Image 1 (cartoon, rainbow, N blue to C red):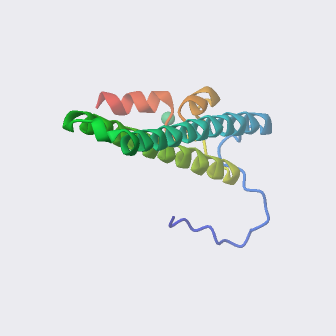
Image 2 (cartoon, rainbow, N blue to C red):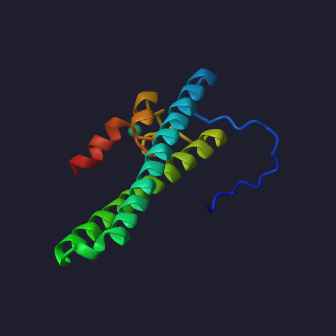
Image 3 (spheres, protein in one colour):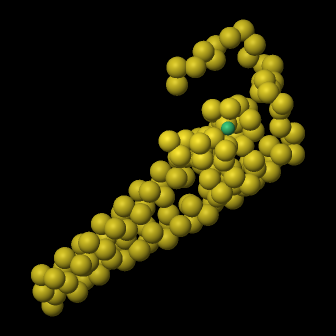
Length: 140
Ligand SMILES: [Zn+2]
């Protein structure tokens, strides 16, 4: 967050320096990101419901459980919580991506500066590199 954003041009529309995306393309990315966020939120809600259910089960019928049953339920619940946390992290990533999109900083490869294809952004909202650069990096 150490960006020097307080320059003297607050109202001017900031266009990316390199071959700006068309408004239609930006809208496509925004729609893809928003759709992904809604999906993730739905999944997150479902997971929370499952956690609540497991919790209730654990409290409800633990009287007849032996140690192993209790252990399994605790394990299941911990897994659900991990899943929920992962989902929350992904939701945050998508929301950050949407913010950066509004600022015009989103969707550009941080290595070569080329626009990352819309399809790739839709599939991986947190992608910060184009496929080529990602592959180059992975080969190292
Ligand atoms: Zn690149």
